[in-house]
Image 1 (cartoon, rainbow, N blue to C red):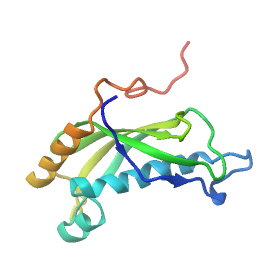
Image 2 (image 1 turned 180 degrees about the vertical axis):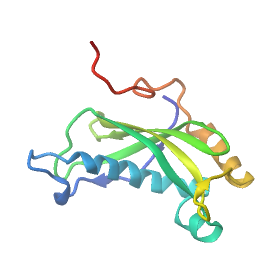
Image 3 (image 1 turned 45 degrees about the vertical axis):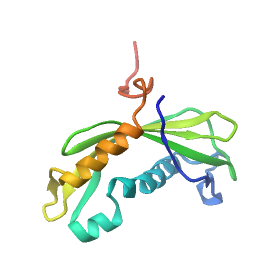
Length: 156
């Protein structure tokens, strides 16, 4: 896949381990969210954007595929790509990478641009839309990820 945005290294914390001895499913989402918090300011989004412009993003949909267990103390980085975007929405894909080269989980999200005074879905300002274009041009996969666009169901 094309060049991802790569997060800083993150470590699996003791509080994240469940009674099965591996990282609880909720904390995969935490890793993906922390990685988004790292690339959002590059686009112009995040806490400062919400405070100064009364505009933000909400997640409309989020799908995780759990591929391999993570355990206490393991270190990972999250790779993030923009699959698509328009003036009100953006579609991201992320992978949690272990330093040994394997992928622990993938995530796909549909984000919405929000006017906080509503709150309601609203078009992005031109500067943010331009930032999305720049980020997507740099961090767009060469091919559609195999795990993107999957539906949940029992095949019969």
